Image (tube, rainbow, N blue to C red):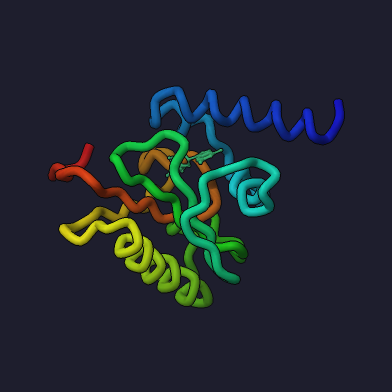
Length: 146
Ligand code: DGP
């Protein structure tokens, strides 16, 4: 199989996982050093990029849960597959992700509020093991969350 075809077929497998319920996708996910988000950063897989600098990359979620749903990730995750793996050296990455979320919320016009979500592990419905922040907005959020 050509490498391009291999990338495409692994993406289709991943997208179909994303189309299953979030819980099923989370249970199917296996932590690995290299994830689909590396392909998105490298633009091997197209995405709608909303923000990019030398440390952070942000794109629209393929399965939006709100009118605005953006995934914000560090370009170098430094072993930070999820929040539960955080060590003190990751403080800069974690702070940068949240600060960038605020910048993007402003850019998206979410002046009346927004929600930040970090899913962690199978019970937290994490499906991609590259730390990421979800920025959701453009509708009234509910509490408690599901
Ligand atoms: P989580 O379930 O918290 O691990 O969030 C991962 C999110 O990533 C999920 O909401 C769907 C999104 N996602 C997965 N694959 C792709 C993709 O190929 N493109 C885009 N734009 N988003 C993706």
